[in-house]
Image 1 (cartoon, rainbow, N blue to C red):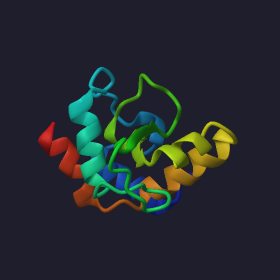
Image 2 (cartoon, rainbow, N blue to C red; image 1 turned 90 degrees about the horizontal axis):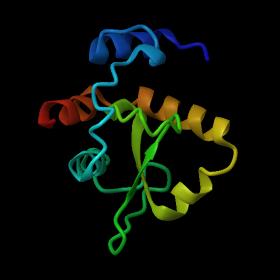
Image 3 (cartoon, rainbow, N blue to C red; image 1 turned 90 degrees about the vertical axis):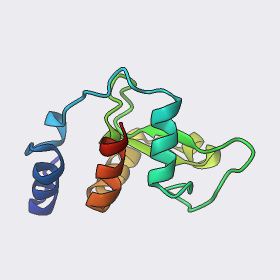
Amino acid sequence: MLASANSREYWRKVYGVERWEDIPKEYDSGFNEKMRTLIRERHNNKCALCGGVEINNGLDVHHIDYDKQNSAPFNLIALCHGCHTRTNHRRKFWQELFTTYMQNVPFEMMSYVRAVM
């Protein structure tokens, strides 16, 4: 996927890299409840897709690239259970959609997770 100039600038600012694939994966083993809580908080405890809140079951945390070993904050997004279930089909579509979404997440939201970890 070709990255826009804005994407590359954002990745340089947040991670010091030019490409999505080069984002540090220092959080690979950090996919735990603390990380999931931080990702949910980053998205204001709302589903990033529909804006809904799941009070009883909490929000799921989805790996955008479907690689469970890549738990970098930039690769994680909060989804309600219904929306998370939808991502099991048409994976390329969802990966591109959420990658674009994350490219537009404000710097403050991204740095929040890195600062707390």
